[in-house]
Image (tube, rainbow, N blue to C red; front, top):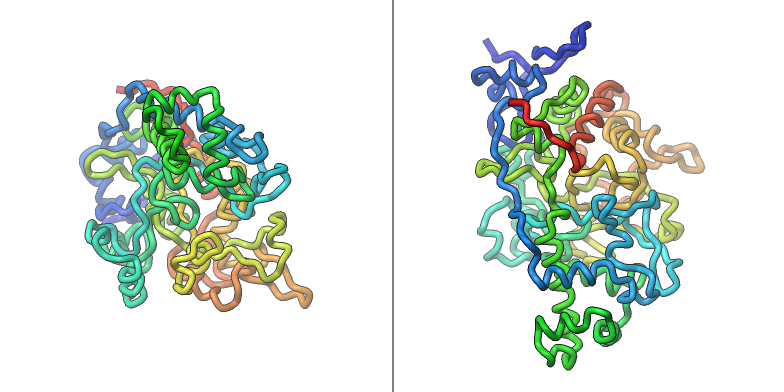
Length: 462
């Protein structure tokens, strides 16, 4: 007899019990049913406890280095920008999980602070383990092969369906992964810090020499002399490079960029219990017949105890609708193609990747105000509705053209719409089929996502 499936149901008295259909958690090769079948596991989960608590290996808590402390000063200094009004912290607000505090789809910048960007600003949290950009399965061999060789290999490889049950098979997909920004064009936090600084629609700092002059006249100029020697101001390029390095060290060393203090983190360590809605949401999040969220937003600790980052750091073409509030989109010929441009240039000819964007972490996602690369949605309810109806009821997602036709995948040129994922659940359904998630499922998944917000006051339950 096949092993029964597992799901959580709420009784009339509000208690949670485990019942019925096997599926996997995240990309672990152990199916959830097998995981729960281990002694007392299903009973513990029914009580809201994590079945197999682990001791998470967290970043060390120690005083910041002098370079990182300098980086902290640079991070909040708006004088580095061309307008004198925009700092790193302006768009990456520490009080808002290092993401924007407002609900704009894209932020304003430029020399007069009136120029709109073209992409939503992602959080700077939980990037300390991000790998370099590569194409292929996650292995060390990628580091010794050129990017173009990996592209050629990826174009030849067959693609496996990606679900939380097909871990071993899907892991062999040759896919883009790693890197920073929505298009992975930076490999280090130092490179990433330089992007907004010189982008004319963001901090618009101008030339390297202009930034060097501002650094030389800053209140913390003496810090550069003490750290890098009195000759540092004689070389503008080196000076700016060291400043960007200091910002990267600040992001790596300061615990606020990767605190791991959510209820979820307490739960997996056996120090908190999930309520019935959160538990149901956890299972719907992992169910390939419903959310299938964990196929891309990995939610299990690694074998060596590292906490999950809720991303596989891979790239997907999801076909989110065009955002009319982005000024650049007023030009009907303008399209943001992600890996193919406009910012990234080296993959422009690899049209199979056009429309692909990085899968972000879901940690602190409930505190976000703009979602997806173009910030088209502003609530988790809207995001889950997109996943539910994009394939089954596209008329609920996309606008209609003058003739009344639903403009499916309207934020991509027609030539690249074949790149949009129609294989992986929940996007494998057809128009008219039943949506994968019920209204209750979506409410429960949101309840679970709220457990990923940092700042939970854990209480030991043992």
